[in-house]
Structure formats: structure tokens, C-alpha cells
Image (cartoon, rainbow, N blue to C red):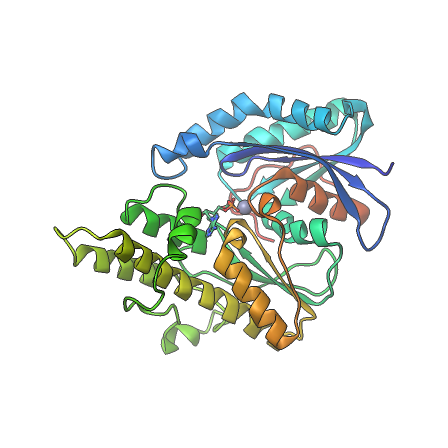
Length: 351
Ligand code: KG4
Ligand code: ZN
């Protein structure tokens, strides 16, 4: 058996621990031995979004049990671990600290290396964890509740930021639109479902294109950036214009379908624009919103038409989990990178 690494992820509202094996196979470098996720969604749902202090407290309650279950499910003990990988940022600082403190204590006690991992490197490596190494250079879209960014992966373990959202993340836009339609939290899955029964041209909403002035702003790379707050505001205006006259189920489905068409089209078009510009041999999509059924279908259709294969992790690995953190940790460890025991949680860590 190859080296085993324990991954720990507590950056937002999932407490997760995983055991991943270094297979020694260069084309399929990692194998998931266990991946335990304790979701706090039920706790935060009541508040319509993640409450940071509640998240930290729940991580504290869950972390020991989740790690023990990850070791049990992999049928191993503490002494079998060769290293510990943990998310050091970005995320909620109080939440990050729970996982990081646990990981440091475990690494110190076991005298094994600690590897601090960037949360988005984890999302990017979730693609490789499942598909094996993908053709490089690759353009990877990381799209979640906290992030909407395009990265160029020119070589393994190197991530170059190409663009990001100027305002809301795509998942955040889903969550806010769901909230104002009274659909609950999190918004992505429910809008995805309702959109299936809606007409995606039923109402007029603005596209998410940047204005000319925005695109040419000197400090920005320009046309690959994203912006979703205007679209969200347009949905809000549409809802307000109906004051006193409630939506029918069909009308709600139509709003969902139209909103989703615009978000997904923007994500897909910008990803393939970047792919063409940087000569990408493949395209990747990771993060919670990659679970979206239309995004998956449209990515596949665009990829087939342009002969650039798209790679997406399965649903279980697309939302926050520790297996992806363990995988990104193994990537760093194999490149000779480990972290000192005094690393700190960094809410705004850059990749
Ligand atoms: O990656 P993730 O689990 O956590 C963050 O790092 O943010 O992503 C959560 C986000 C939420 O905003 C949720 O609404 C969105 O992913 N999401 C979806 C779908 N499933 C989850 N968005 C669109 N369609 C879905 N099917
Ligand atoms: Zn995430």
C-alpha cells in the first residue's frame, strides 16, 4: 500500500475528514480510502445562510468523531498515516481554525509532516482525484458559493488565476435568488430542479456581460471576469414589480430557468474563451455549482463541439470535502512542500 494521508476540511459549513492513498501510478496518482462529510446545512438553513459563529461551534463538536470515522472507514489507525493535509484558507477564519488546530495537534503528536492546502487547489485537484491526470494545459473553472474563478493549470500543481468575479460568486447568486423567491437554502439544487420545468426565455433579464468601461479597466485582465450582482438585482426588481400578485408555480419555474440559462451560459462561454486563448488541451469544472445539471450538460456540448474534453468531479466530490484537500496535499508533499507547525488560518489566502 502507498503512503496514506489524512485530509481535513473545515473552511465553511462542512466538517470533513478523508484518507487518501498515494498510489504510485503517475496517471492516477490518488485513491480515496474514505471521505466522511458532516454537513451543517440543516443548522444554517434556519438563518437563510451560513452563520460563521454557529459554523465554528459545530466544527468543534464534530471534528473528533468525523476524523475517527474516516480512519475507521479506511480500516486504518493513526499510526498508518504518513502525513496530514488541512485547509489553511480561504474561508471563515473561526471555522478554518478548528480544522487547522486539530491537524497541527495530530501532526505534532504523530511526528508526521503537516501540509497546508489552499481550498481552491483542493477543488481543482478533485477533478484529478476522480479522472486521473487530465491533459495540460487545462483551464479550470472553480465555481462555488464563495468563488467563481478561472485558473490556468499549465503544469501539475501550478495554478495561475486568470479571472474571477467582481462581485457575487455564482453559487451566492443562486442562493440569493432562491431566497428572494422564497425557495429556501441552499438555492442551487432547488433552482436547478425547478428550472427543468421552466421556459428559459420567459422573462427578460439582462445578461451578465461587463460594460465596455468595465472590461477596459486598466488594473483588470478584462473580459474573462465575471459579475452576477446585476442579474440578481434584476430578479429582485422582477419580483418587486409583482407586489401583491403572487407568482404561480410555472412563473417561478420560468424565473429559475431564465436565471439559470444566463448564469450557465456566462460560465461556459467564458471558460471556453479562456480555453481557446490559452490553447487548453482540456477544461475542468469544480466546486459546488459544478453539480448543476445544465452546467454539466452545456459544458459537455460545448466541449464536444470544440474538441476540448471537459472534466467534472462526481457530485460527492464537487461540494466541499476533505478527499480533495488530501489529494492537493499529496501533490504538494510529492513536490517536497510541507508546512511549519505555526502556520495560521488565512481567511483571504491567495492561490
Ligand atoms: O463548494 P461548495 O459546497 O461550498 C463553497 O465552497 O461555497 O458550494 C456550495 C454552493 C452553494 O451556493 C449551492 O447553492 C451551490 O453550491 N450548488 C448549486 C447546485 N448544488 C449546489 N448551484 C447550482 N446548481 C446546483 N445543482
Ligand atoms: Zn468549496
